[in-house]
Image 1: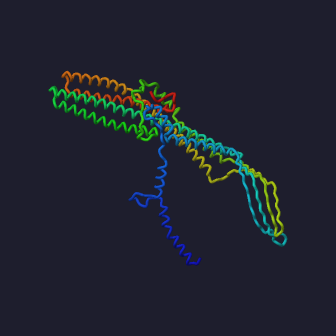
Image 2: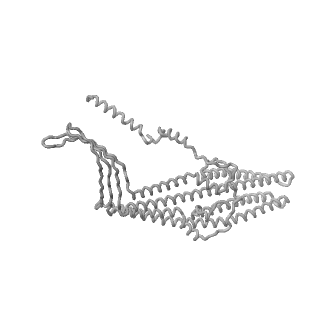
Image 3: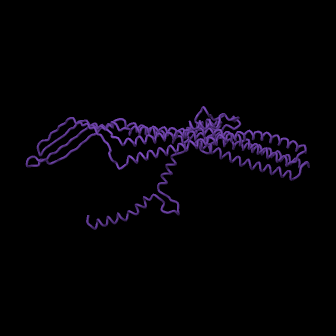
Length: 481
């Protein structure tokens, strides 16, 4: 190629560089417009071929909390992620243990060369070809803590991962139980709103009838109509809350939000009437079985193993290397006839390695490992204090919820009796309509508070079991009536 041709080629390549950079741009060119990258279409296609996992539910079946939890544990993506992470740590332990065994490789060497060898006063051309299939062995005989420290760290990391898997189940169970009790509360509020609307309609019809007979005034009728409209408004809000709560529960169970399914009602659940243990017992149990606290303790153990592994670099290591096999060769000198030959080949080598100076790298590695251990220990101490505080608060909230539930039940009974008495007295002309409407509102509020108090008590009991770790201990907690 002539000099002019080279110049033209370089110019064309240089002009193409900016276009190539533009095509390979990995960020939006400006902040003032929506970016439309080319790769989005391929991602959209991939998303279309990855549908949501279908979970079979029976529409007419009434699911208990235990059955909902079972569905969530099987299909919730969080449990699958934790499971795969635990399997990954198990594989890492296998990799660490493999360093205790020798490695064997099948190797084949093939070489051909031509040299000029000086013999007497002349160089003689020599041609050689060699082919060697051999078995290569490498084995680290000892290293004074390097491999064992790595294995101990892998064991601790696997234990931490397994405990994280258990903690994922603890959180998933709590999410499902919380969503379930919130749905029960929403359903109860809807039912209470329906009863309140029926009562308001009855009062309104009674007021209209008494007005027609001259026994009531127009303001009485308007007051009853307003109370009925308010009850209808409250019912519609309660219906919307049920839809939202049902979608939240479906999501926690790994169902589509619009999935239709039935759940066991709150009237079928048994409420606790007392608190079994003391708060100190609850705290002690939490500190002995909370998987996240045990997971943090396993991380401290892994940090200890890292220190052991770092210290091993101060000591020598002994390794063995060997090869054994056959060699087949061909040789020829000048134009003389060539010849073939073969025979056994082997070698064995012991190597003792001891790093005497590395620019303080080992010291810094040990210092780093010690600092990591102290940080892990501090995180363990902080988590232990946090767990104790969480259990204390959960225990206090459960005590409060129990007292509120008992008070709400008494309030509902009193409000029901007050409404019935006011309605009966109004029929005899002893009480006016305002008294009846007021009693009806108090009764509606009492129904709502009773439902809220019952579901709150169940939620607080579940929260205490979540904080103590009892959710994954069947001997301490089991969902359902």
